[in-house]
Image 1 (cartoon, rainbow, N blue to C red):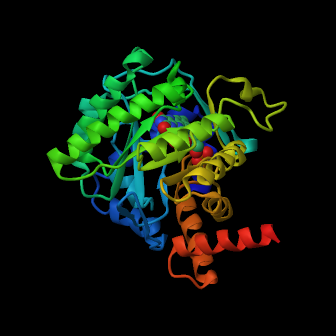
Image 2 (tube, rainbow, N blue to C red; image 1 turned 60 degrees about the vertical axis):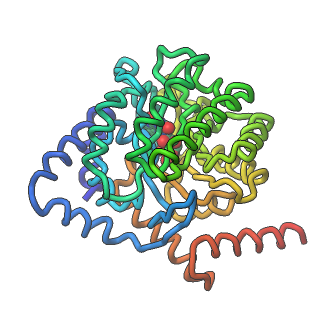
Length: 369
Ligand SMILES: Cc1cc2nc3c(=O)[nH]c(=O)nc-3n(C[C@H](O)[C@H](O)[C@H](O)COP(=O)(O)O)c2cc1C
């Protein structure tokens, strides 16, 4: 179905097409029968492949990455499309318009996107109101950020405010310190700033656990453009502060293999195929330090089950996609998870985690020979 729809959507501006698709979905979901049809067509073709991580049972290793449903408006349709879990946001304490349009660009020859959305969102109050309506649909993570006009020295106040507001409605919360489209945000990945941020957020996590009798896992989402020293620092702090997960990675400000591509000159973060190797390298380096003690969610350029498998072997426990959904449509979710399920079966293991551990061991043995 998407094969027919895509050429039409690609005639128009990328953000406008996105808005049309989701306005249509919203309307369609008012009609009885549309949800069950979607579930049958898409979610029904995704095999159960559970993964235990962060104290949660994810029904499938593949979730939706942040940025597509910034305002928590489409949780149910996204679950029906086959995502075992979805990450919403980035949401900031106060509403903000984001950068001027045009701010989302397709690069079809490289199955890539460049975006400089700039955290356009309805703000935490309206977000929580939307989210409350979709409780009980599946695992929901909420990705939080600071407002553009909040200086980094006060960023922690924004994150604490957002964490408190979303915690009762989320299964995990993501601290986004890696979007390239909020000036200065990535500086929060530096040792001193991150150390203080994590200290205060972990403190808040404990306080929230007392109020709600539930531990809300906290993840930090990092950039693919970190050097080795920065990766080592983040990993050390993740271990010291007992962070629940690291999400690797956000979009890149670099332009790998984009020579001669005019659109590549647009400012913003690049996602999709050209990001694949960069993000896998960050996952592998993080895993070298974390060794399974902190969950790694791998994201960046996953297009098929082979890409997904490579990220798992590199060290990821869970995976997310965004750009592949734009290029391949919702059937990509089932294709990837079915491909992973086939690998589990072929390995003779019963769970994905066992199959991945076995493959990692075999790789270690072969490379040490
Ligand atoms: C249009 C667009 C908007 C995005 N917005 C966010 C966001 O608000 N917060 C965030 O953490 N990541 C955001 N991302 C990054 C994605 O979550 C993901 O990390 C990145 O696109 C790499 O995955 P992919 O190659 O599968 O797209 C956005 C990506 C795109 C393409």
